[in-house]
Image 1 (cartoon, helix red, strand yellow):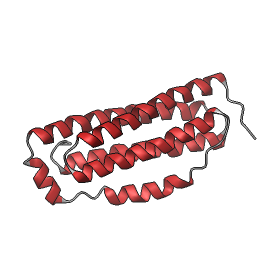
Image 2 (spheres, helix red, strand yellow):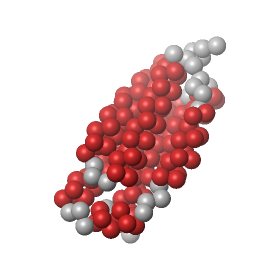
Image 3 (cartoon, one colour):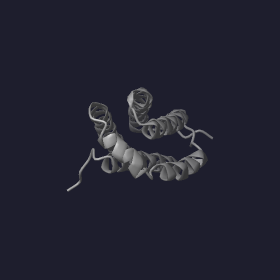
Image 4 (tube, rainbow, N blue to C red):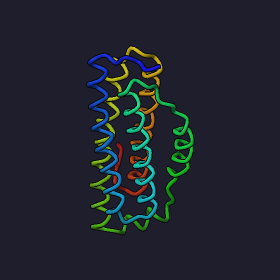
Length: 163
């Protein structure tokens, strides 16, 4: 049975759809530009997860509550990938210009994830259907994990120094 969306829910989902499309494009584009194979793999994984988010948002736009099952495996796989080896860190730190370019791309992705996560936060509060709210919450958690993965990579590779 399809859920009738309010006008506000419809508009919020349309925004999230655009955000997910931008995320997919950025992750795919940046994966082709970065030097580190481990980072390339991470960005490609995030691109696939963003595609799953887009699919979920599209389901919600037609009033369907998306099944969030596939995301669980992605989370476990992603947490394993977030263990970055110091060997690649040492190599990246001596990478110079390539390392700087990667850092710029990752800073952009980190800012994007902060924004997208915040937009999901707003949407969650506006939804009347608890299952849809739960689906949005699930997507937001994955967006936060993307941000964490990017932060961890940058931190290990000397691109981000939290003080």
